[in-house]
Image 1: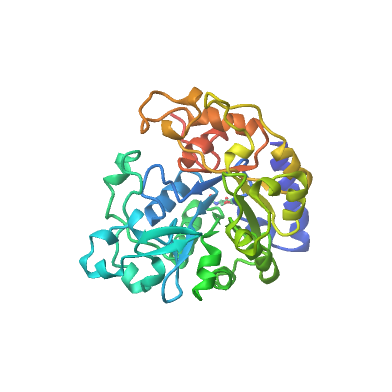
Image 2: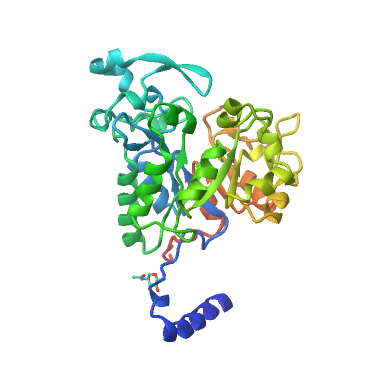
Length: 370
Ligand SMILES: *[C@@H]1O[C@H](CO)[C@@H](O)[C@H](O)[C@H]1NC(C)=O
Protein backbone atom coordinates (compact mmCIF):
# COMPACT_ATOMS: atom_id res chain seq x y z
CA UNK A 1 0.00 0.00 0.00
CA UNK A 2 2.81 2.36 0.93
CA UNK A 3 4.35 1.63 -2.42
CA UNK A 4 1.14 2.52 -4.22
CA UNK A 5 0.79 5.81 -2.30
CA UNK A 6 4.38 6.59 -3.18
CA UNK A 7 3.68 5.92 -6.81
CA UNK A 8 0.58 8.11 -6.76
CA UNK A 9 2.52 10.99 -5.20
CA UNK A 10 5.24 10.52 -7.79
CA UNK A 11 2.60 10.66 -10.48
CA UNK A 12 1.07 13.83 -9.08
CA UNK A 13 4.51 15.42 -8.96
CA UNK A 14 5.37 14.28 -12.46
CA UNK A 15 1.99 15.38 -13.75
CA UNK A 16 3.06 18.96 -13.18
CA UNK A 17 6.06 18.37 -15.43
CA UNK A 18 4.62 16.04 -18.05
CA UNK A 19 1.10 14.69 -18.38
CA UNK A 20 2.33 11.18 -19.08
CA UNK A 21 2.22 9.47 -15.75
CA UNK A 22 -1.49 8.81 -15.52
CA UNK A 23 -1.25 7.14 -18.92
CA UNK A 24 1.43 4.70 -17.92
CA UNK A 25 -0.03 1.28 -18.25
CA UNK A 26 1.14 -1.37 -15.85
CA UNK A 27 3.39 -3.80 -17.62
CA UNK A 28 5.16 -7.13 -17.83
CA UNK A 29 8.03 -6.23 -15.50
CA UNK A 30 5.81 -5.06 -12.63
CA UNK A 31 5.03 -8.43 -11.00
CA UNK A 32 7.79 -10.74 -9.81
CA UNK A 33 8.87 -13.30 -10.73
CA UNK A 34 8.16 -12.57 -14.38
CA UNK A 35 5.92 -15.19 -16.03
CA UNK A 36 7.14 -16.07 -19.52
CA UNK A 37 4.50 -18.25 -21.17
CA UNK A 38 6.67 -20.79 -22.96
CA UNK A 39 5.29 -21.23 -26.51
CA UNK A 40 2.07 -19.75 -25.07
CA UNK A 41 0.12 -21.71 -22.45
CA UNK A 42 1.48 -24.81 -24.17
CA UNK A 43 0.49 -27.10 -21.30
CA UNK A 44 -3.15 -26.53 -22.24
CA UNK A 45 -3.34 -25.73 -25.97
CA UNK A 46 -1.04 -26.80 -28.87
CA UNK A 47 2.11 -24.64 -28.72
CA UNK A 48 2.70 -21.52 -30.79
CA UNK A 49 -0.94 -20.92 -31.69
CA UNK A 50 -3.00 -17.80 -31.15
CA UNK A 51 -5.11 -19.91 -28.78
CA UNK A 52 -2.08 -20.79 -26.66
CA UNK A 53 -0.86 -17.20 -26.53
CA UNK A 54 -4.28 -15.73 -25.71
CA UNK A 55 -4.92 -18.26 -22.97
CA UNK A 56 -1.52 -17.47 -21.45
CA UNK A 57 -2.42 -13.80 -21.23
CA UNK A 58 -5.77 -14.46 -19.57
CA UNK A 59 -3.92 -16.71 -17.11
CA UNK A 60 -1.82 -13.73 -16.08
CA UNK A 61 1.36 -14.29 -18.10
CA UNK A 62 3.55 -11.21 -18.52
CA UNK A 63 5.27 -12.30 -21.71
CA UNK A 64 4.25 -14.67 -24.50
CA UNK A 65 7.18 -16.55 -25.96
CA UNK A 66 7.11 -17.23 -29.72
CA UNK A 67 9.96 -19.13 -31.36
CA UNK A 68 10.84 -17.66 -34.75
CA UNK A 69 11.69 -19.41 -38.03
CA UNK A 70 11.61 -18.12 -41.61
CA UNK A 71 9.51 -18.96 -44.64
CA UNK A 72 10.93 -19.20 -48.15
CA UNK A 73 9.56 -15.74 -48.90
CA UNK A 74 11.06 -14.11 -45.82
CA UNK A 75 8.16 -14.06 -43.37
CA UNK A 76 8.75 -14.79 -39.69
CA UNK A 77 6.41 -17.45 -38.31
CA UNK A 78 6.14 -19.02 -34.87
CA UNK A 79 7.38 -22.62 -34.70
CA UNK A 80 9.79 -24.33 -32.35
CA UNK A 81 11.84 -25.60 -35.27
CA UNK A 82 11.97 -25.24 -39.02
CA UNK A 83 10.95 -28.92 -39.42
CA UNK A 84 7.20 -28.62 -39.66
CA UNK A 85 5.90 -32.18 -39.21
CA UNK A 86 6.40 -32.15 -35.42
CA UNK A 87 3.78 -29.47 -34.89
CA UNK A 88 1.66 -29.31 -38.07
CA UNK A 89 -0.27 -31.69 -40.32
CA UNK A 90 2.19 -31.22 -43.22
CA UNK A 91 3.08 -34.94 -43.33
CA UNK A 92 -0.52 -35.75 -44.22
CA UNK A 93 -0.74 -33.24 -47.04
CA UNK A 94 -0.33 -34.98 -50.39
CA UNK A 95 0.34 -31.74 -52.20
CA UNK A 96 3.51 -31.27 -50.14
CA UNK A 97 4.79 -34.87 -50.22
CA UNK A 98 7.60 -33.91 -52.62
CA UNK A 99 8.97 -31.28 -50.24
CA UNK A 100 10.20 -34.01 -47.85
CA UNK A 101 14.01 -33.98 -47.64
CA UNK A 102 16.99 -34.49 -45.35
CA UNK A 103 19.46 -31.77 -44.40
CA UNK A 104 21.84 -30.94 -41.57
CA UNK A 105 20.37 -28.64 -38.94
CA UNK A 106 23.02 -27.52 -36.45
CA UNK A 107 25.14 -30.46 -37.56
CA UNK A 108 22.37 -33.04 -37.09
CA UNK A 109 20.90 -34.82 -40.15
CA UNK A 110 17.19 -34.01 -40.02
CA UNK A 111 14.44 -35.32 -42.27
CA UNK A 112 11.12 -33.68 -42.86
CA UNK A 113 9.43 -30.60 -44.28
CA UNK A 114 11.22 -27.31 -43.70
CA UNK A 115 9.77 -23.85 -43.25
CA UNK A 116 12.33 -22.41 -45.69
CA UNK A 117 10.87 -24.56 -48.50
CA UNK A 118 7.36 -23.12 -48.08
CA UNK A 119 5.87 -19.71 -48.84
CA UNK A 120 3.77 -18.08 -46.19
CA UNK A 121 0.68 -18.71 -48.32
CA UNK A 122 1.47 -22.44 -48.29
CA UNK A 123 2.19 -22.46 -44.56
CA UNK A 124 -1.16 -20.80 -44.00
CA UNK A 125 -2.88 -23.90 -45.41
CA UNK A 126 -1.36 -26.06 -42.63
CA UNK A 127 -2.97 -26.73 -39.26
CA UNK A 128 -1.17 -26.94 -35.92
CA UNK A 129 -1.03 -30.24 -34.05
CA UNK A 130 0.19 -31.21 -30.57
CA UNK A 131 3.89 -32.16 -30.55
CA UNK A 132 3.70 -34.51 -27.54
CA UNK A 133 0.23 -36.11 -27.72
CA UNK A 134 1.16 -38.91 -25.29
CA UNK A 135 2.08 -36.40 -22.60
CA UNK A 136 -0.65 -33.89 -23.53
CA UNK A 137 -3.66 -35.88 -24.74
CA UNK A 138 -5.97 -32.96 -23.94
CA UNK A 139 -4.05 -30.70 -26.30
CA UNK A 140 -4.17 -33.35 -29.02
CA UNK A 141 -7.97 -33.03 -29.06
CA UNK A 142 -7.37 -29.51 -30.40
CA UNK A 143 -5.32 -30.73 -33.37
CA UNK A 144 -6.38 -28.78 -36.43
CA UNK A 145 -8.07 -25.99 -34.50
CA UNK A 146 -5.37 -23.40 -35.20
CA UNK A 147 -3.12 -22.32 -38.04
CA UNK A 148 0.52 -21.21 -37.84
CA UNK A 149 0.73 -17.55 -36.78
CA UNK A 150 3.17 -14.96 -38.11
CA UNK A 151 5.11 -12.73 -35.72
CA UNK A 152 3.01 -9.79 -36.90
CA UNK A 153 -0.20 -11.66 -36.07
CA UNK A 154 1.13 -12.34 -32.58
CA UNK A 155 1.93 -8.66 -32.11
CA UNK A 156 -1.59 -7.79 -33.30
CA UNK A 157 -3.11 -10.33 -30.89
CA UNK A 158 -1.10 -8.94 -27.99
CA UNK A 159 -2.05 -5.37 -28.88
CA UNK A 160 -5.72 -6.32 -28.80
CA UNK A 161 -5.42 -8.14 -25.49
CA UNK A 162 -3.60 -5.16 -24.01
CA UNK A 163 -6.76 -3.13 -24.49
CA UNK A 164 -9.08 -5.72 -23.00
CA UNK A 165 -6.69 -6.50 -20.12
CA UNK A 166 -5.73 -2.86 -19.52
CA UNK A 167 -2.06 -3.70 -19.19
CA UNK A 168 1.04 -3.94 -21.33
CA UNK A 169 1.86 -7.48 -22.44
CA UNK A 170 5.38 -8.44 -23.40
CA UNK A 171 6.72 -10.50 -26.29
CA UNK A 172 9.78 -12.70 -25.81
CA UNK A 173 10.82 -14.11 -29.23
CA UNK A 174 13.59 -16.66 -29.76
CA UNK A 175 15.59 -16.64 -32.98
CA UNK A 176 15.91 -20.32 -33.92
CA UNK A 177 18.81 -21.77 -35.90
CA UNK A 178 20.36 -18.36 -36.56
CA UNK A 179 23.45 -19.59 -38.43
CA UNK A 180 21.41 -22.02 -40.54
CA UNK A 181 19.02 -19.32 -41.72
CA UNK A 182 21.85 -16.86 -42.39
CA UNK A 183 23.61 -19.43 -44.57
CA UNK A 184 20.55 -19.95 -46.76
CA UNK A 185 20.08 -16.21 -47.22
CA UNK A 186 17.17 -15.95 -44.78
CA UNK A 187 18.95 -14.33 -41.84
CA UNK A 188 16.27 -13.36 -39.40
CA UNK A 189 17.96 -10.79 -37.17
CA UNK A 190 17.31 -7.63 -39.19
CA UNK A 191 13.74 -8.52 -40.28
CA UNK A 192 12.79 -9.41 -36.70
CA UNK A 193 14.15 -6.13 -35.36
CA UNK A 194 12.40 -4.25 -38.19
CA UNK A 195 9.05 -5.78 -37.30
CA UNK A 196 9.37 -4.71 -33.68
CA UNK A 197 10.66 -1.23 -34.49
CA UNK A 198 7.92 -0.72 -37.10
CA UNK A 199 5.33 -1.69 -34.50
CA UNK A 200 6.66 0.92 -32.09
CA UNK A 201 8.74 -1.34 -29.86
CA UNK A 202 11.87 0.74 -29.42
CA UNK A 203 14.52 0.84 -26.71
CA UNK A 204 15.19 -1.07 -23.50
CA UNK A 205 11.88 -0.07 -21.90
CA UNK A 206 9.81 -1.68 -24.66
CA UNK A 207 8.17 -4.92 -23.45
CA UNK A 208 10.40 -7.16 -25.56
CA UNK A 209 13.26 -9.58 -24.95
CA UNK A 210 14.99 -11.21 -27.94
CA UNK A 211 16.65 -14.55 -27.15
CA UNK A 212 19.11 -16.84 -28.88
CA UNK A 213 21.13 -19.97 -28.14
CA UNK A 214 23.93 -18.53 -30.31
CA UNK A 215 26.32 -15.75 -29.33
CA UNK A 216 27.57 -13.67 -32.24
CA UNK A 217 24.11 -12.91 -33.57
CA UNK A 218 23.22 -11.39 -30.19
CA UNK A 219 26.37 -9.25 -30.36
CA UNK A 220 25.34 -8.13 -33.86
CA UNK A 221 21.79 -7.44 -32.67
CA UNK A 222 23.20 -5.18 -29.96
CA UNK A 223 24.49 -2.93 -32.78
CA UNK A 224 21.16 -2.62 -34.58
CA UNK A 225 18.66 -2.39 -31.70
CA UNK A 226 18.34 -1.23 -28.11
CA UNK A 227 15.66 -3.84 -27.41
CA UNK A 228 16.73 -6.14 -24.57
CA UNK A 229 18.62 -9.32 -25.44
CA UNK A 230 18.74 -12.69 -23.67
CA UNK A 231 21.54 -15.23 -23.88
CA UNK A 232 20.19 -18.76 -23.68
CA UNK A 233 22.27 -21.70 -22.41
CA UNK A 234 21.93 -25.22 -23.76
CA UNK A 235 21.34 -27.89 -21.13
CA UNK A 236 24.63 -29.61 -21.94
CA UNK A 237 27.50 -27.62 -20.41
CA UNK A 238 30.05 -29.25 -22.66
CA UNK A 239 28.27 -28.28 -25.86
CA UNK A 240 28.96 -25.09 -27.79
CA UNK A 241 26.56 -22.56 -29.25
CA UNK A 242 26.33 -23.59 -32.91
CA UNK A 243 27.96 -20.40 -34.24
CA UNK A 244 30.88 -20.91 -31.84
CA UNK A 245 31.29 -24.54 -32.90
CA UNK A 246 31.39 -23.45 -36.54
CA UNK A 247 33.95 -20.74 -35.75
CA UNK A 248 36.08 -23.31 -33.94
CA UNK A 249 36.18 -21.48 -30.60
CA UNK A 250 36.12 -23.33 -27.28
CA UNK A 251 33.31 -21.24 -25.75
CA UNK A 252 31.14 -23.95 -24.19
CA UNK A 253 27.94 -23.12 -22.33
CA UNK A 254 29.78 -24.27 -19.20
CA UNK A 255 32.41 -21.55 -19.71
CA UNK A 256 29.70 -19.01 -20.41
CA UNK A 257 28.15 -19.89 -17.03
CA UNK A 258 31.26 -18.96 -15.03
CA UNK A 259 31.51 -15.51 -13.40
CA UNK A 260 33.87 -14.44 -16.22
CA UNK A 261 31.56 -15.82 -18.88
CA UNK A 262 28.57 -14.04 -17.38
CA UNK A 263 30.51 -10.75 -17.20
CA UNK A 264 31.14 -11.02 -20.94
CA UNK A 265 27.45 -11.75 -21.60
CA UNK A 266 26.51 -8.65 -19.59
CA UNK A 267 28.25 -6.52 -22.23
CA UNK A 268 25.50 -7.36 -24.74
CA UNK A 269 22.55 -8.96 -22.93
CA UNK A 270 20.12 -7.89 -20.20
CA UNK A 271 19.19 -11.38 -19.08
CA UNK A 272 20.23 -15.00 -19.24
CA UNK A 273 17.96 -17.95 -19.97
CA UNK A 274 19.71 -21.03 -18.59
CA UNK A 275 18.37 -24.53 -18.50
CA UNK A 276 17.11 -24.79 -14.92
CA UNK A 277 19.83 -27.33 -14.09
CA UNK A 278 22.41 -24.52 -14.02
CA UNK A 279 20.58 -23.09 -11.00
CA UNK A 280 19.47 -26.20 -9.11
CA UNK A 281 20.90 -29.44 -10.54
CA UNK A 282 19.32 -32.84 -9.91
CA UNK A 283 20.99 -35.31 -7.55
CA UNK A 284 21.61 -39.00 -8.28
CA UNK A 285 17.98 -39.82 -7.36
CA UNK A 286 16.65 -37.18 -9.76
CA UNK A 287 15.60 -34.95 -6.87
CA UNK A 288 16.62 -31.30 -6.55
CA UNK A 289 20.16 -30.86 -5.19
CA UNK A 290 21.51 -27.61 -3.69
CA UNK A 291 21.43 -24.36 -5.60
CA UNK A 292 24.62 -23.25 -7.35
CA UNK A 293 26.03 -19.72 -7.34
CA UNK A 294 24.69 -19.11 -10.88
CA UNK A 295 21.98 -16.62 -9.87
CA UNK A 296 24.29 -14.64 -7.58
CA UNK A 297 27.03 -14.60 -10.25
CA UNK A 298 24.57 -13.34 -12.87
CA UNK A 299 23.07 -10.71 -10.56
CA UNK A 300 26.53 -9.44 -9.67
CA UNK A 301 27.02 -8.35 -13.30
CA UNK A 302 23.49 -7.01 -13.64
CA UNK A 303 21.86 -9.88 -15.55
CA UNK A 304 18.28 -10.95 -14.91
CA UNK A 305 17.86 -14.74 -14.64
CA UNK A 306 14.96 -16.46 -16.42
CA UNK A 307 15.44 -20.26 -16.43
CA UNK A 308 13.59 -22.72 -18.66
CA UNK A 309 11.41 -24.86 -18.67
CA UNK A 310 8.89 -25.55 -15.93
CA UNK A 311 6.27 -28.15 -16.84
CA UNK A 312 3.67 -29.84 -14.65
CA UNK A 313 3.70 -33.33 -16.11
CA UNK A 314 5.52 -35.92 -13.98
CA UNK A 315 8.03 -36.78 -16.67
CA UNK A 316 9.55 -33.29 -16.42
CA UNK A 317 9.54 -32.94 -12.63
CA UNK A 318 12.15 -33.81 -10.02
CA UNK A 319 11.21 -37.20 -8.57
CA UNK A 320 10.20 -35.73 -5.20
CA UNK A 321 7.41 -33.71 -6.87
CA UNK A 322 5.94 -36.42 -9.11
CA UNK A 323 2.42 -37.58 -8.26
CA UNK A 324 2.81 -41.08 -9.78
CA UNK A 325 4.88 -43.08 -12.24
CA UNK A 326 2.63 -42.03 -15.11
CA UNK A 327 4.56 -39.55 -17.26
CA UNK A 328 1.54 -37.58 -18.40
CA UNK A 329 -0.10 -37.10 -15.01
CA UNK A 330 0.22 -33.76 -13.28
CA UNK A 331 2.66 -33.40 -10.38
CA UNK A 332 3.59 -30.57 -8.05
CA UNK A 333 5.36 -28.03 -10.24
CA UNK A 334 4.63 -25.25 -7.77
CA UNK A 335 6.97 -26.82 -5.21
CA UNK A 336 9.68 -26.98 -7.83
CA UNK A 337 9.04 -23.32 -8.68
CA UNK A 338 9.18 -22.33 -5.01
CA UNK A 339 12.66 -23.82 -4.74
CA UNK A 340 13.78 -21.76 -7.74
CA UNK A 341 12.17 -18.58 -6.40
CA UNK A 342 14.05 -19.24 -3.16
CA UNK A 343 17.22 -19.50 -5.28
CA UNK A 344 16.60 -15.94 -6.49
CA UNK A 345 15.33 -16.24 -10.07
CA UNK A 346 13.75 -13.13 -11.63
CA UNK A 347 11.38 -14.96 -13.94
CA UNK A 348 10.74 -18.34 -15.51
CA UNK A 349 9.65 -20.01 -18.72
CA UNK A 350 6.55 -22.06 -17.91
CA UNK A 351 4.16 -24.20 -19.95
CA UNK A 352 1.44 -23.68 -17.31
CA UNK A 353 1.68 -19.93 -16.66
CA UNK A 354 -1.31 -19.94 -14.29
CA UNK A 355 0.62 -22.04 -11.77
CA UNK A 356 3.47 -19.55 -11.49
CA UNK A 357 1.06 -16.64 -11.45
CA UNK A 358 -0.80 -18.16 -8.50
CA UNK A 359 2.47 -18.19 -6.56
CA UNK A 360 2.54 -14.41 -6.92
CA UNK A 361 -1.05 -13.98 -5.71
CA UNK A 362 -2.63 -13.99 -9.15
CA UNK A 363 -1.11 -10.77 -10.33
CA UNK A 364 -3.39 -9.17 -13.00
CA UNK A 365 -6.31 -11.48 -12.31
CA UNK A 366 -9.23 -9.88 -10.53
CA UNK A 367 -10.94 -12.49 -8.39
CA UNK A 368 -14.44 -11.38 -7.39
CA UNK A 369 -15.37 -11.95 -3.71
CA UNK A 370 -17.72 -14.88 -3.11
C1 LIG B 1 -6.25 0.72 -16.25
O1 LIG B 1 -5.07 0.68 -15.51
C2 LIG B 1 -4.66 1.91 -14.93
C3 LIG B 1 -3.34 1.66 -14.21
O2 LIG B 1 -2.37 1.23 -15.08
C4 LIG B 1 -5.72 2.39 -13.97
O3 LIG B 1 -5.35 3.66 -13.49
C5 LIG B 1 -7.05 2.47 -14.69
O4 LIG B 1 -8.05 2.78 -13.74
C6 LIG B 1 -7.38 1.14 -15.33
N1 LIG B 1 -8.61 1.26 -16.09
C7 LIG B 1 -9.62 0.43 -15.92
C8 LIG B 1 -10.82 0.67 -16.81
O5 LIG B 1 -9.62 -0.46 -15.11
